[in-house]
Image (cartoon, rainbow, N blue to C red; front, side):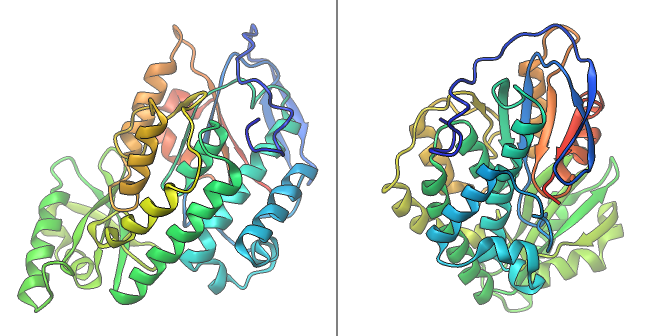
Length: 356
């Protein structure tokens, strides 16, 4: 089972090799029309990360999707479903709420996909998740149970939220030209912070997400981000956009949370993956349960190697001239949009499965 006891129908992830990709239009319960392949040789399922959440992102749930939220409500101690449906947005966007919200919504979207396209989940050959989305991928790949993953996420979100409240920090998307010097900009920003009186520990600035060619997310102290914004042209940076997050995730500022995550990981069962689950840390599939445990401890402060993940995933799964069909399960379509910047062929065979 994938998410015991909810995913009981998915007793096997062995792909059924069918012959073609004849598209057929299928209607979701919300009457939104999604065109999905009638016959699949293989599929890939991707999960979005924090920042994709929005009020109203969960409207139509399958029976099993409702069960997931009931289990989440019991584990978290508050009504997550109501928060996803009704907000308020300020509460949903808090790290302690947004991380579990995106996680549960994404797996509930997998349940929607299972009803929309018979075999799409069973034929999943590989999965990956962006940042917090990796926890959904680990559940789908049967390495961690749903409730156990939620327990780790709850503690992870609380630990990182505490850091966010102690250090003024944030993140921003940076688009550079071919001659752009983002790493140099981060180095100069750190030096600027030290000169203005911050401690070396506070003076953090670095690449936290590798998105697609020439596009990164930079995280760090607020002063460091302001330095880069002011001097962007000097580093060949063409565009900057601040992200609606409260901290510098996947940077050294989050290292204090690692010890707490390590402790909670010792209390849960982690299994070898049943399918390819790609790690944010190095962009390659996990090989063992022990590797997963070690990686998740560092996951909170290491950069997300998303561009490398996507490149490796589709290179590994390519069969002749064919690529698997890709489903992004969760709120919004950020990952399928980025997919087009990395592998346009795979993007043309991608579909977003939402619950709104």
